[in-house]
Amino acid sequence: MATQKTAKKKPVKQAKSKSPKNDTKKTMATVFIMGKSHEVPADATIMGAIEYAGYQIIRGAGCREGFCGACATVYRMPGDYKIYTGLACTTLVEDGMWLSQLPAIPAQKPVYDIDKLDPNVATFQKIYPEVFRCVSCNSCTKACPQDLEVMDYINAAMRGDIEAVMDLSFDCLSCGLCAIRCPSEIVQYNVGLLGRRLYGKYLSKESKQLKKRIKEVKERKFDKEYKEFKTMKKEELKKNYYDRDTE
Image (cartoon, rainbow, N blue to C red; front, top):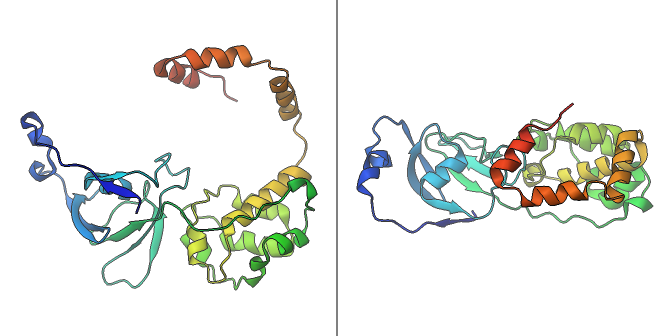
């Protein structure tokens, strides 16, 4: 786990009532972080529990809202042989949980030139041949914190159905939990990324609005606004963001 234990500080008298040891109203749970037992609030997320226990998360945290996929976590429960997976920022602790974060999933990503690829099954065969070892065990789908049908888009890649790969993998966070459970050693989230790139490059309908906006950016139409934003303070930026026009 990419964490470090924070230095102990001297207790402050006026903050005494907020100390975990003196807060009798909270329901606590016992969790094991890096093999060590900690008492944490029972309603805490895994990420919150790690920080409550006194660890500073230096890797494996990003948006903290279940969008970036940086806080992949594996855990076990007492008397249960299964290994469970989830995101530390959205998964709540349970009493007796043994957990460990995985701030990075080892997975090589092939280098390719999208302009030199064809949107067909042969491209998947060439770049990700391990896809065709899929045994349809569905372990990848069960591990997905987004509840995506991961096995289905891998099967779609085997058929060369680029649109289905794009559609089924569209909400992928690239957390990597699917890959660590795969007996065929497929890196599913990279396969989905290739499918989305192929679809965007060759199969999607042209967006007139996007083409117009790219032209405007190249003509430096928004340079003045960019400079103004760079001089704004945080509160002013937030106001502009929430007051913006949305469709």
